[in-house]
Every structure is written in structure tokens, then in C-alpha cells.
Length: 421
Image 1: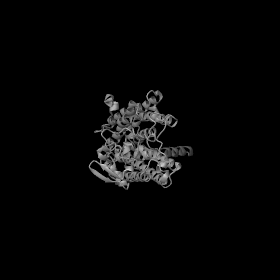
Image 2: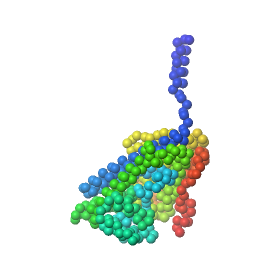
Image 3: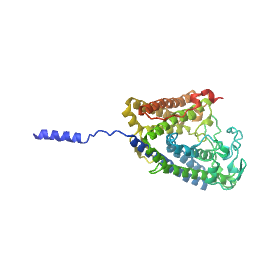
Image 4: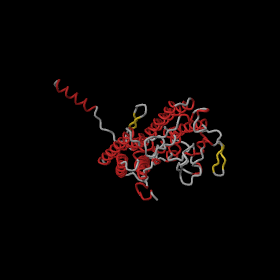
């Protein structure tokens, strides 16, 4: 063999040595990625909630405009990873049974603190004006509750008091209300304007009961942290949520797709977007006190895309990736996979445009105003994208042969007339 031929043979050997066929993803592989993403998402939610707790402590210890704004900023940061976790709802009972404690909405905020006299409330809610912060001894039905000390246990016990879902005492939105106060601007510009002096001491205190308001904010934030600690544990190795999925990978695929489809259609496109648009009602905003609903919509959409593509960008800049639903669907029906990826991209483009419009000066509640054609178009584009991608998720279900997968609906999409009855 000549030197030239030997060199060519060696080059061919090298080129073939390192090009190995890709191993096909298995359901077990995809479950591992999904549970790893869940653990990372909830862990980021926990770490940012801990930062929020620190900012709340600073506000309570030294009330000022600066410490109030810092606490608000920390709340906003804590929402980004949490909203990406909402895709784990609907298909995972452990998450569904827990979620209302941390993200329930809308709420009759008069249960917690002072509100404007004309504040609407849920029908037949006798506790809508209870004002725990101003009331050391509470009467709930036939029961008398000692609220002289506001603790996490007290806040937890008051959640959905009287069996009314609108009596939200804990979670992100209770904290949001305590940081921003009511947004009384309707569909005009502006979010809640709670003054920092609502946490001031002595004669500088506004709103009354500043010490109890501070105690409630601290208790609610401590409770949020402990609730998130519980959910992180559920997704760690040996945790109940992870083990339930690992035990039955086919059922796990159904849980993944159910979460994607239900959040896309009934929850986000329907209850969170279409309903408010139909009613032109800013009270239907998910983050109505801070007027940051556009961010929640964006991160919900991103969470859906994360699960399908098997990736999650952590708050520290690292990334969790692995075999994905997309890999499984592509192996079964490449056309369905390509269509769904394209639909997810289109939805995220619409939600990004919606986010940027709100950040650029047209607040989400302004978009809901009657006659605001530009705002309506921005919201509608997000709704349309979510609905379209739901159809592709259904085709992915069929391509994988996944059974017992049903998506949440919404009257605003399925029976619009019922909304006005």
C-alpha cells in the first residue's frame, strides 16, 4: 500500500469512527427529561421566592419607596420560573391538588385588607370584606377565629374560607395585592398604587394596621416558600411526582400532553385571555394588581414549548435538556412534529409581540378596553396561536397512540353565549 493510500484509509477510518447513529429516544428517556425539567423549574421558583422573602423582610424592617420597589421587582422575578411550571398541571394530580395554594385567582382581596367601597366580589361571599388585617378576632360562619397573631398557619387556614374559591388568602396573588394594592384604573394606564407608608410605623402609617399588614405579608411569603419546598421535594429523586411517572411511562406521556393541551386551550386561550377580552374586564387579568399579565402569558406559553422540546433555561444561565416528546413524535410522524414545532414557534412570536407591546407602553388592561382594535388584535393573535397549537398537540397524541388524554375546555371558546348568562 502506498503512503498516499494508507493516509486515505486512515482518514476514512477516522471519519467513520466518530459518526455513530443516533439512538432513538424511548418513553423512559423522555420521562426522565420531563421530570428533570419539572424539578429545575420548581427549584428556580423556590430560589426566586426565597429572594422575594428576603426583599419582603427588608421592606418590613425599613419601609421606604426603595424597599417597596425592590420587593415588587423580586415578586416579578419569582413569577418567571413559576409560570413556566404551569404546564405540569392538569396531568399530574400531585400538582393539581397543590396549585391552588400558590396561584389561585381571581380573589376577593377584601378578605385580606382594605379595598375601595365599590369593589365587586364573588356572588354570595359573606367574607368578601372580612379584612383580616384590621380584625384580630374573625367570625367565619359559626366559628370564631383568633387572628391576633398573623402566622403562616393562620393564613393557610383562611385559604378558601367558607368554602368560597374567591377567598384566596395565600400564594402569589395575595402577595401581589399586598405589594401593589388594588388597580383602580380600569382600562386606563396604571397598576396598583399602594404607598410604602402602608408599612410605615407610628404616625406615618397609612391604611391602618401597618404592623399587621407587615405580619401578613411576611407570613404569606414564608408560606409560599414552604409550599414550593414541598413541590421541589415531589420532583426530586424518590419524590412522589417523579416516581408516579417513572412507574408508568405511557401514562406519563399522557400527563405531559394533557398538561400541554389543557394549558394551551381551556386555561390560557380561554379563561385567561378570551374571557377578559369578551367582557372587556381588567378584573379577569391573571396579574391584575401589578398589571403584569402579559408576562404570565408569555411564560405560560414558553413552559408548553419547553416540555415539547425537552429543554428549560434556568435562572442561573444553565440549561436542562434531553430526549423529548418532539423526538418521539418525529420518529412516528415527522410531519406532525414539524407542524407542532412551527405552531409553538408562531405562538411564542405572538406572545412575545404581546409582551413587548405591554412593556412598550400599552398596558394589558388598556388592550382590554372596548374599541381598542390594536390591543384586541395583539391578544387575539396569542389566542389564535394557542388554539392552533392545541390542534397539533391533538395530532401528536394520535401519532403516539396515547390514550386517556382529554384537554380542559372553556365556555369562552366552546359556548360563548354561556359567558353572558
